[in-house]
Image 1 (tube, rainbow, N blue to C red):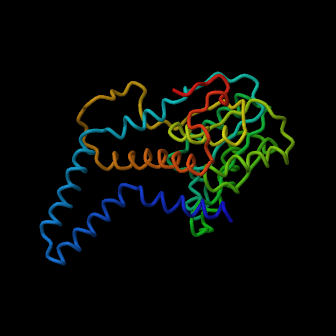
Image 2: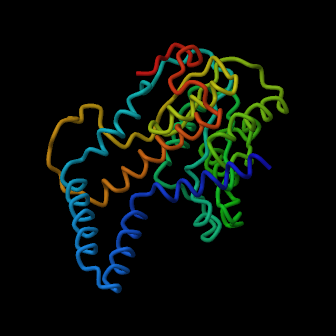
Image 3: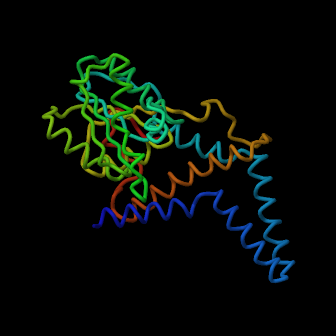
Length: 281
């Protein structure tokens, strides 16, 4: 019951912090102000909206914020004798895959690509995938994540016997319990765990894993959206829609971390003793 309440609350909160929804709400308020002949109020709302849109479009501040998340843990870390490779879900385009009858991935496809690379680099190590249907309505068209991932992994040469697949984790906070359950069922020896997820998502995902009692984790960030040498200072770059999308990603991670900290699902947002040989920056 508690998990379902937290899940619904997280979805509502995620809806409220999306910048595109702020724009829609501002336009609705402007329309209402005009209908009630409050022209000055309508003008003020539009002015603030336009100023924010122009600033965000010209000054890529959201890129700098995203880069700070992505740079938290190093790319291509040193990996020695891992016990299991864990791929966090989120890259599967289940709806189009089921509709068109062919496996599709979304913009986070590098999670699966990196999993394939690691699977071939360590050919004897189990590959664990954890994901689930994160639709608030339980949309059945989103239930095919396991099939998508299994098809792509096996068709790229990964032995089906190595795969440990789970589909009960709807949110980042639900991954640790599913991972622990799957490792127990399949009797996988505990040891260095390579954790694969998007670079911007890694700080929150790792904090949740460490707070759940896991140790000896090797963070393997992938799906980078920024460049390492990006100048964090002032520069003009007109890309308002791209910046809105980036800001949504950043706010989702910040808000998710704050909510998990407030609800006790994260005890330390910057764990230092849990990641193997990796220190948060």
